[in-house]
Length: 144
Ligand code: DQA
Image 1 (cartoon, rainbow, N blue to C red):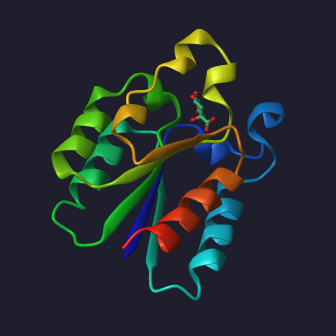
Image 2: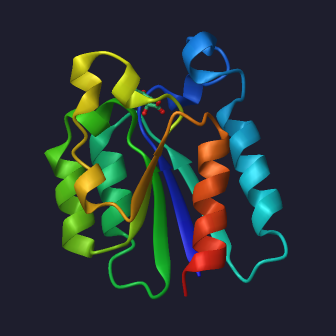
């Protein structure tokens, strides 16, 4: 199984960015914790962050046709805007889990609309950095 973790805009600033909302854990910490978790599993992990929508679209398209491929996706602000990313996921049919550090349903109204939730395997929102680990744990233990 290969799991690709995709992170959208401004998540490179985790740890410094509005820590009262997003916590103090950095993206490097999250990647390290995920790599620890898969250490003994029969799985590989690719991890990327981009502030550019087209780079995320290209990363999804590059996975087209791969066997046993899953995505853990925090689209960040693109959650609420990106038909292009949604289309890429639908075009490639790669199963994915949507993750948000904050609870997007307990914030501004514009964050309540996600272009991904209805086509995701599931969505984890509001559990901080642990959401990434829960998503990974699910893929490792509950999917084939
Ligand atoms: C986020 C929530 C989004 O609304 C926001 O634009 C982000 C991060 C989260 O992880 O809580 O950048 O996806």
